[in-house]
Length: 111
Length: 114
Image (cartoon, rainbow over the protein chains, first blue to last red):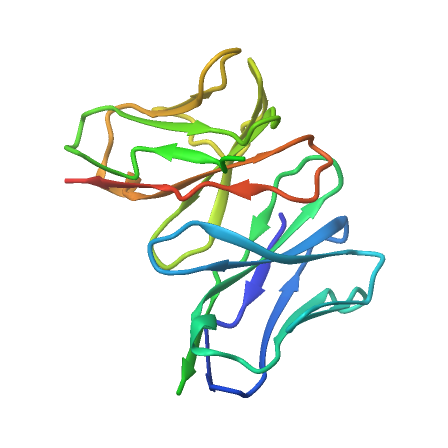
C-alpha cells in the first residue's frame, strides 16, 4: 500500500533555513501536501504541489519535488520561533480525495 | 465563512461506553473525511462520505465503528463499546468535491477512554 516517510525531528536556530524531507511510494500520487500542526490543534494546510511541477514557492516556503526519486521537501526560509510545530507530508491520488500522511517531523526553533 | 466544526473537542468515556463525534463541514462542502491520529503518529484515513453515502470506508475498523452523513445535520462518527486503544484524536476534513486539492480540517475531537 501507500507509504509516506519523514524524519522525526529537526532542530534549527532562529533565522536559519529549515529543510524537512519526505519520501513516498505511490506512483499515482497527484497531489502532495505540507501541513502544520501546533500542539493541541488541528492541521493547517501550508502548501501543496501537483505532481507535474518541480517547485513551488510561496513567501518563505519552497516546495521541491523529485518525482523520479519520489522525494518531497519543504524549505522554510528565515525560520522563526513561531514555526515550531509538527509538519506533516501527505499525498493523494487523483479524484479520491483520500490522503496518506507521514508520521510528522517535529521542528524545534531555538532562539 | 465558518470553518469545519467538530464537537465535542474533548470526550472522556469509560470502557464499554459509546462515543459519538460530530463534524459540520464548511458551507458548500458536501464531502467529508474522517481521520484518526494516535499519539505521536500521523493521521490515518478512516472513511470518506458524501451526503447520505459512504464512498470509501477502507480505513474503518471492521467492528464497533460506523459513520454517517445524513441529508440534514452533521456527519457522525460512532464508536460502540470503546476500548483503551480507541483513545486518539479524531479529525474531520471537508472539501467541495472529490477532485478538490484542498481539504479543510477541523480542530479535532480528543477521545480518552478510561
